[in-house]
Length: 251
Ligand SMILES: Nc1ncnc2c1ncn2[C@@H]1O[C@H](COP(=O)(O)OP(=O)(O)OP(=O)(O)O)[C@@H](O)[C@H]1O
Image (tube, rainbow, N blue to C red; front, side, top):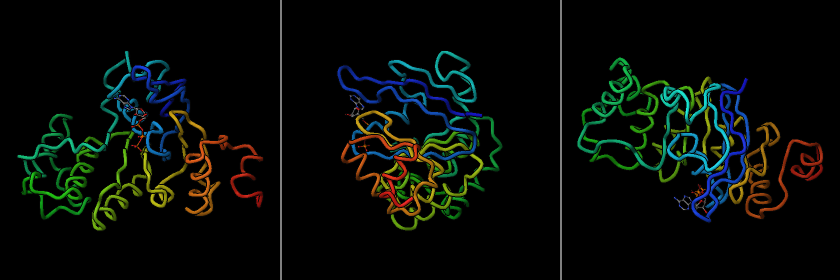
């Protein structure tokens, strides 16, 4: 059964199209990775699912509840990791997590566990304002996990990270196996390690929705990405002729 249902969703900014008539279903526990060139609509789609923006048209349902104009509690089942850290610089890492835990009525104890998970157990008493980008991102990731959301949204989770933070973030994301995850990334190699499915976007449109098993290697994914997202040509799909095209006719 679908946990996320996106049906005919468009988002316009005046005459500018952000997302154009996008539809897909995501079953509970699946991870879909959104790929596409700059301006393809990835962030806009993530923001719509996080209910930070309202679609111009179309419907979004989470756990069979409408995301807009329905029970607002559905929003507490969503966690977003975006470009903004959503942290208070003047508070310590642990205080930031505790504040979020209290807002969601979650026991504080989880905060220390999550600092451990993101590799910052020994830095929890330091002000976040003094942290590097990578460390702040790791605290943000811990914050997103505090209330144990059912749907996790990640917008470019790997961008600008040092190797230690990159490795840690990648490991945490790969271990979220039972969660429903939608992640937008330009990092095709890490996206390949994460995805059950790939959503290819171009000019706001969903031009392909492909099972990760269709790609044997990250290079296969890159080839398709170059062909469909950069070239902006025909949409890949799950039909046999598309598969043959994606794999150069070898399957
Ligand atoms: N607030 C806004 N006002 C006007 N246009 C916007 C706004 N937000 C996004 N857009 C436009 O919508 C389109 C999709 O943008 P979006 O940021 O979703 O793309 P993206 O795939 O996330 O790109 P990137 O990889 O560069 O982050 C772009 O043409 C962008 O200029």
